[in-house]
Length: 371
View 1 (cartoon, rainbow, N blue to C red):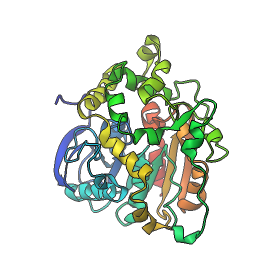
View 2: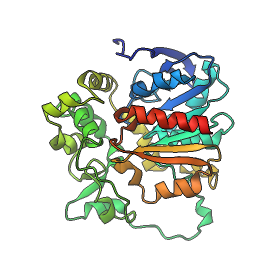
View 3: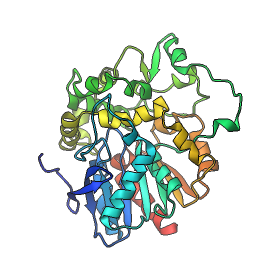
């Protein structure tokens, strides 16, 4: 594999024997300093933190960003659709984070910082081991708390089949997370008709502030009609895969040339890694959620709240903050008892730490200093 084109001050290495993985990580700052652990989402990599790592290291931290289980150059996981999902369940992802810190010689972190699907991992790190993960930063994906025990609401009637309701709309639709859980999803994206780089360019574009159609607003509820107000990259056309869904919104060559937060050389890193690994490792995370087979394990923490200092950061143009109706409000009022800020950054969509890195760093530094 070619070396990654890393900014000055960021280095890469591998750590062997971390919960069955050979972990590829990026780091900045001296290992003896207090640690910040950065957890990426989908379809991202440790490389997604490249714009914020050095400024955080210059503030006095050892900044560590791994390719998480299922991603990038970290190995030791299976990319088989029919493989065991248990290694990708939330409790084991927290175990990955703990094992990495132990291997690096850290007995705890000043903050665990998670973006997108890394956000719930960071939240669960804080719930399960608050002694290790002393501060929690959630980015782009609100955390509404652990699932409740079904015994607490005996006899509750099952809700309507949201998937049947979406499919029955005048414009038939489906939810992207359940699409990501299907067998064809990996190949449809890895071998997109327009080519993998073009697919990723369109996907990152439509979820950014560059796409003028992103005007997020709270949803009225978990109904097909409410969900269908979200863009197609969240509530997809029933007969389309994700590559086909975003293809009409491919930015113009002029827009691509003017893109300062994801120029072609940086997009090529993502395209190169996903061309090699495929997407299935990350898609297994979605299957753990949509298939519900590990829900009982998560219910062990029913009623538990994040009691350490916490922060939420997202882009003002990010629909993701509303995709689970009420979650943003539950996070602030119930799930996090010491939330010190909830910031929606202008000029950013879903990829907030890449689109607006200076503001992201400023908010993180303010939080770390205040808490």
